[in-house]
Length: 204
Image (cartoon, rainbow, N blue to C red):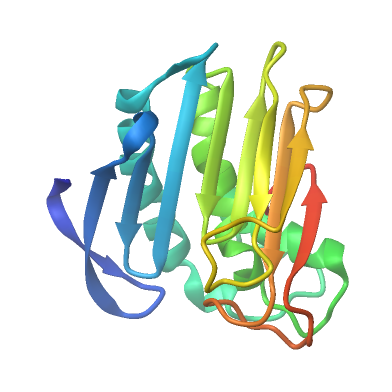
């Protein structure tokens, strides 16, 4: 476990101070935790896991969360269009994603987990990682280059450890997003499905 220097972050998403923690996992992955955010980050060059890069990306994730937290007042409001006073790229992506869904009840916070996952995945891809997977509580951002492919396991019951389904993603698309939500877990749901999974070009 790595406790980052300056580890206490005042997480504006909840107004509470949280500690930043990075844990090394088997196979080179890391888990980054700060308040409501829990990321599992994996990256490779070819078949070689890149744990040090994953640690760097975990540190970057805390900055992404803080950026979103600073803009929470605007991001908790409904938007009919892109606001003129919002300049942060992460915040703008959150608004774009919710506008694309077309549900007027949603605020940009509906896209927060996927957007942060995408930012971390792009951080790693921009630094030469050829296969990247970032899981932010069931919102998974994937980046693939070359001949790399991945399989994403889907759970229809959050209480079970085993996967009910597997989705195979191939490199015909550089960027993928897979998000699953349903009964249980930490996300708001207005449905009755045990789980619903969406595959898109981004996790946001």
